[in-house]
Image 1 (cartoon, rainbow, N blue to C red):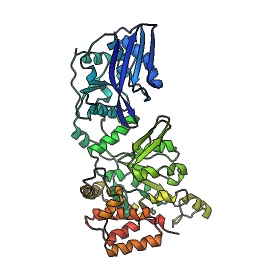
Image 2: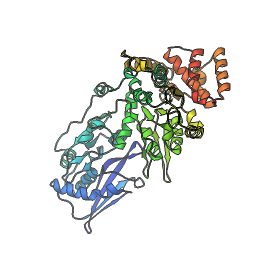
Image 3: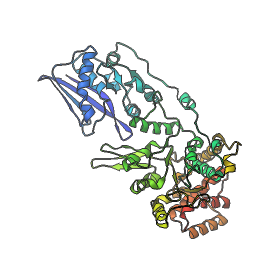
Image 4: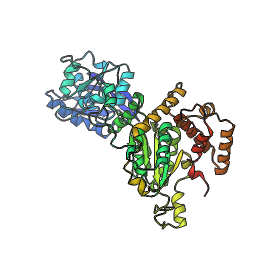
Length: 509
């Protein structure tokens, strides 16, 4: 007899429907799985057989063929265990169900028949809702994550026996519901705050501009000047995530299996700080079956690259596409995948290998060749894509020992939120625009109109610093953000002047 069970798969970070077809026929007892199954899927026959027997059901002693359609899509993971087991029991006429074609089923089975959690539940639930299904059966451990998707009944399952009785209509299970407002308002406060940073007011100002406009930042200074400390506090002044952004970010963490336990939605902006030994695949994503990398895990948040020149040069160069487009495309022979990767990149570096070039209290021991080799690890095209270049000098003793309270993250975040609201209102017709860093040349022409004094000032800066066209556009975007922070409708000369001074690494030495 033939039985069909609906399930799901993940392609990149998006979900899609998979149909599990189970046929039981006369022949020597055997178990075949077709439809491009990978290792964990091929091994499911042993888990399924033990789970069925240990749940108190008879395993058919006949020829069993399982087809996972579409057959040209590779099937990975153990999430097909539960639908395969239910398909076998349905094909063996152990139970019958009138709602089998209305529900999708996902879950890994233990040998005792209990259901274990699986990765990528969120995008698969979204795919089931898009397909118009009435509901979806998911592991109990994934219930909160799945229930953030509205418009579909999410049924939490603990065991194979419970899933069978629900589909057979023997028991009734209440769909899981979560309070989205509570998820957003109950997230824990940040453990760090800008009030703990002494001095470095100009760096804080640059980070405020970066947060308000989504601009990338490069901080250059001596060891111990506070670069890492300030970078880790940048998420504390970023605007709160909206639901659509939270859903995008959570999909990525769900696929990677990094979603925190008992937390169904990422409600705080992520902060990722990979080590400089990371590979290009680890940073951008990749592998035989392409998976997201650190740039995608930082989507809608902050990617911090400490000791930037210590990263391999070819690893840094692959950052060009995500910095420019906000996406990463990974091409393979059979197909290509795109992952979201819109983030604020904050990078930190020393002025030289020893770190003390230009320091009044330490002598630099580096030769001119060593300094040149160190600086040239960062290519011009990469520096062009970093909007703000900030010098971070050592903090003097009187600043360090100051017992007064500095401006808190909450106070800075209020100004950032006000500037962000201005940008959203200005780009309300284009929902993908969340900040000034994403403005197109057409938007720049419309929203960055310069009067004659501003135009002359910018022309002089471009000619003196020999800036590229990309740097010119970056200055306009930064100027627009500075004007938004000042609640100014027009860009003024002081906004241009402040924006130009953030292009320090463009200057000829």
